[in-house]
Length: 119
Image 1 (spheres, helix red, strand yellow):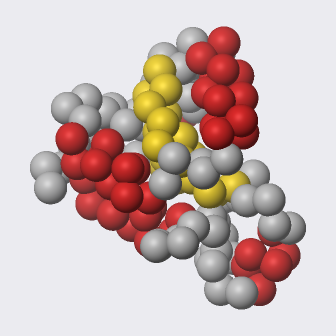
Image 2: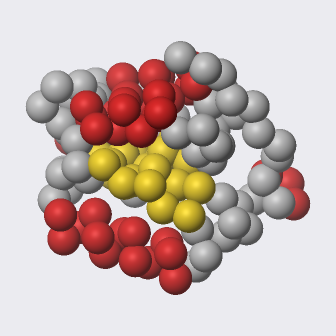
């Protein structure tokens, strides 16, 4: 897997709306709504319905993927494991986790490290 390096985002590493975001969410309506919302803010969106498709995007995308926005609970691998694979290719990238489950149940089950960013 090729490793990509990126420059810091905006001022003090803040995203500016010009970055590329990979959205992984199995619920089509949720994935579409997230993509529409972020596109409205000028982000470039890549999306995947599951972790297998996400790995294909991570391995096949030639440009930078600045942010991985991923569901935490998936059948084959969890969001944190997917983020570890993402960080191999994009060591400067950021990961943001989301779930329909409450954040306490996700962290209590060991699915999310205590300092992980959760939406």
